[in-house]
Image 1 (cartoon, rainbow, N blue to C red):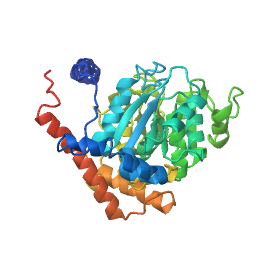
Image 2 (cartoon, rainbow, N blue to C red):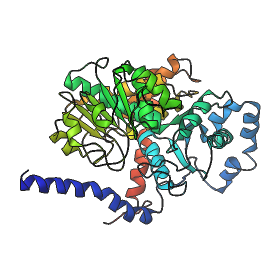
Image 3 (cartoon, helix red, strand yellow):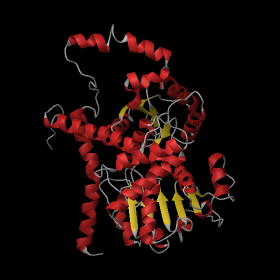
Image 4 (cartoon, rainbow, N blue to C red):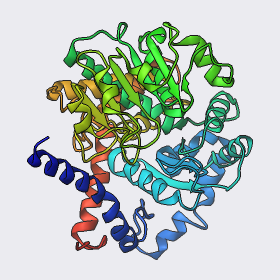
Length: 449
């Protein structure tokens, strides 16, 4: 390796450290990322008689007679609670609900700026079990139009999501972004990556490194989209999930029965040998995935190293080892496969048609539209998926999700494609314009490095 190349790699590593350094400066400066602002007009103080007592009694009585009117008379139509117990935060693990607040605030900011959704962090606990989290969500559903579960440890997260989605008492959509959101955006990236390398989804071998909530959901969505379960191989911290292991139970035992058609055993190296795709959502790197393991993969290999905050392998190392396409979860590298491309538009469409749930088919529809947005812009090995700057992705995604919900009979409102797009575009543009106005006028203070 030349001296010039070593310097370039060191510079890239230093660049990768910058977001964390800046975060410690900017978080205390702004003292939070979201705030409440009025939605209604306040012409003078007499208007409080409309918005509060005595006038507010009139809409209260209307809602008491017809609960669906809460969507007409209040902000419930556009609100999401970001619920977390802080037990599985990014790559940080169980840091507790208070330490999880910066992440949930950031999530709420992305909801607002990218999707026009009024989201609020709701960090709960500590020490809650699955049934307690389920009960909390059921208690708060009168206030919110949807629930985004976030950073809850496995297997608790599976139980919480599955039970809430199946509970007839839950009348609003419940979504776990670490499962469904990650799966949606990963599928979008994979759709386009396979187009570039010229491989078919039914034939590719996929090594899934990590058997947590993200990869389990990715596999479920991939199978729904037509990928072959028997050509998928899971690896957890103890090795490949195979029927030869006697330590598997619960969902891991089910995975072993449904995947790994070749009956492979061993570890990550054995799973990656001959694989067309490596999908890593496991322990943060940079040495979780070795360069020599990438060299064992098939020609035109695709590497998704999406652990946070550091990918399982640095992108330049994966490329040097022979990968043709490399994606990570970071915005400062090319091919960012990040949930922020999914959940704002998915919830926008879900809320706008008042869907009662978010199905796997809705996620697949969103993934296909995300992929199509980038295909329309132009595909390349370094651009398989749009970025957050491509704001048109979100109203287009909202249309795909809303129309699928209507098709599946899950929407309370039956809107046309044009109506969904127009409403989503208007709300999202308004959210961005408001943020820019607040910065320009100094209501959001200017930060100096």
